[in-house]
Image (cartoon, rainbow, N blue to C red; front, side, top):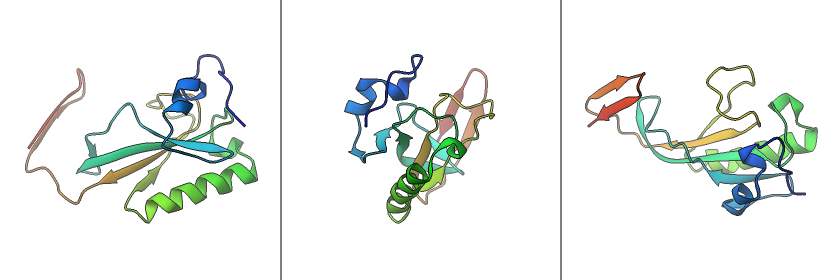
Length: 126
């Protein structure tokens, strides 16, 4: 079951599916093209996304089989040190209107110092 290109959704594009590092019948895991520098104050080592193949807006829109699939994938990555995170569909900072769950692997090192300006985005750390 492949996702269709739904109104230009970047997660429904064939190229996104080609970039998948793993895939099940219902979802795939891809590297996030918008990398996070920090997660909860720690340097990020890896940032992946679990994306359902069916175009839905929220976890609530998934059927039971899709929910179990995504939770199974999340569990496999969590045991490898990844944090699991998904924004709600109404959150203003959500970048894509297609449900996706972040898998973020941060190290246990906090930067010695950090300077951040929100607009324009500038992050300086050491």
